[in-house]
Image 1 (cartoon, rainbow, N blue to C red):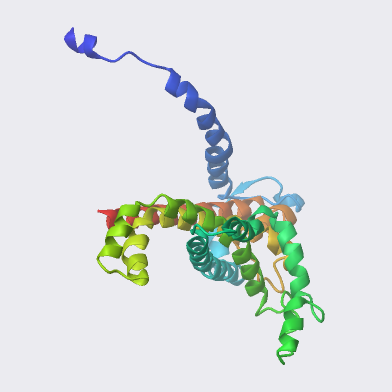
Image 2 (image 1 turned 180 degrees about the vertical axis):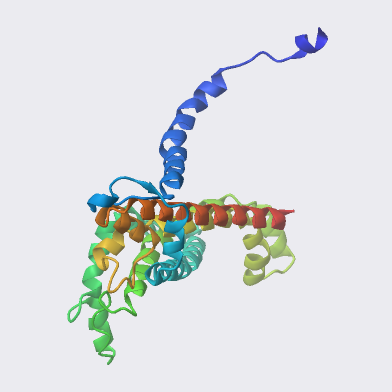
Length: 297
């Protein structure tokens, strides 16, 4: 009797408040993932009459993808894109935050200048940079000729430079965005720690390396997670700059997913790519948090 009396009364309000979000996640995240897992075990191509009806083939879609040299190339391009954009964007965002985290006149203008690329839609940013990469009269080639270097002429059409072109645009676009998170983190750091370090004779580098970096660890964890996810899901500028070419030299995983689903209308293969996509993101996110929690402990 006492245990029943000690029980807290059921309060439905917290569950009602979270219900819309739970329904949204279930309908637009959980269900599509489960459906993709199911469809990945079938062969179904809507542009071929005899394959319009799904037929069960087990893991054949995954086996075909992993044995396809073009898909392996796409995975390699995705890794190049992530390695080329994520660390540099995060580092530049941190450096920008350090530069504008000062109480000086006109600092607001520089904050706006660094953040401004993020305001532009990715398609608009890619269109601007397409002029930079244009052969003959593009700003990049004009500057190179001014310095006495005549090539390369076609950045987005060169198989060796196409992925570099989209990496440059992504870094320019995202660095200011990550700067905002770092700036917010820097402005919330305890000032007494830095005052004590200054009294102990610590120089700027020692303060940065031994105090600022450790205190910004969780901010870096958050930024690295969203940067990694953004690197996987951002393909707008690839459509504008290279369309995945030449010869798939700039095709990344999400672009390949779009091509398989909407150009080739291969539902089974596109579903298998979706599952691979989700598994990679989950593996990175979970590993990132586990490593961070161990460091905190």
